[in-house]
Length: 469
Image (cartoon, rainbow, N blue to C red):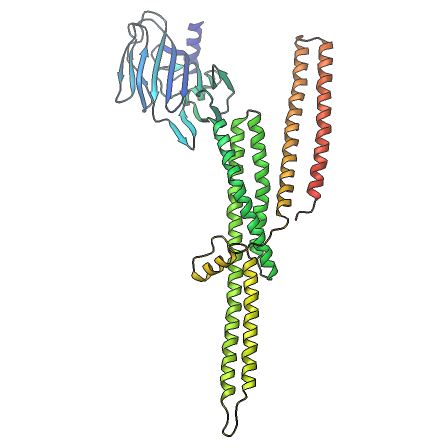
């Protein structure tokens, strides 16, 4: 059979090496960690004493700790500088040998924020012989999970670790073997990373909610003074939508953590944290810009009063200049001064009341005038109405939506269970009676879930109709 396979290979591959040797099976195992440990097992088929020329086997450029196990009749030399092995198989007396090559790759792993990644050719090109079949396996450390995998591969468990595997055969994957197998794999302790990200998000949540509340209060104050803050309102609405999305994503991440789906949990937790940071940034931006607008308005009003006072004083001086033989009226002078004094006091009271009720602005410039306003606004903060109720409504909506997704996922598992029962019945693993009993039990569970989903959807619809404060 091996002779027939060799003849077929020669017919299929006109460019085959003239030497009568080929690899029947090439197995590679990559143990991924901070570095990569590689084990290669090569099953070679050849004609005894027929391979006259040396065979140059290439190694990765970052390989080290290279070791080889081969029959005594196989002579070899390792070139550590140029990273290749020279095989001399001219004295091999048999037609089948196994060669094992082990080495470590030190520069193949890239780490960022706790996530490791490996990319490159899992199976190399330009080998000194034709390879008939390839099997490549990647194994990650215990407690680690795979993240993104390209090309897609099935994840399975080997011992305490998880692994993926690629297979190629020259009959069906000729270009894959001749061009190499490029892969891109990420892996990490996603359970730990997801938990840490959720904890960070929960720790920042109160600060983001406070900033959101402060932005709402600033807009209320701006409206009371008829200021045009339409751009800030749009920014506030964006923050409002992102706050709702945050609660949805963080609940989703927690549910995935509970079900053991750590990589998706990590992705949703990261998205939640990003949304929460956006809420904080946009809310503070709203407060800052509104505060600046209000302060500029007050400064203009103060300037108007100052100008009016100057004009009154000028008028007063003019009225004191009398023609010869006339006298000025002290009653008129004191009356004008009294009006100016009363008006100034009233305006000062209005400004003070506003500043006392104004919430503390965030990051409002560094000029002395703005610092003065900040100090006054620190004395008292306007009471915010409706915010707690709004946050509660948003949270209820997110929790109900999360519960509906959770029940839908459970319903899908029961439907898969029914499908498995059909397969077992078709394979005669269970009889008709057991199939009927188990099917009825699963149907009851599905009906109960459907009823609960209907109730939850009704509650969610009622909350969505509720007028937001």
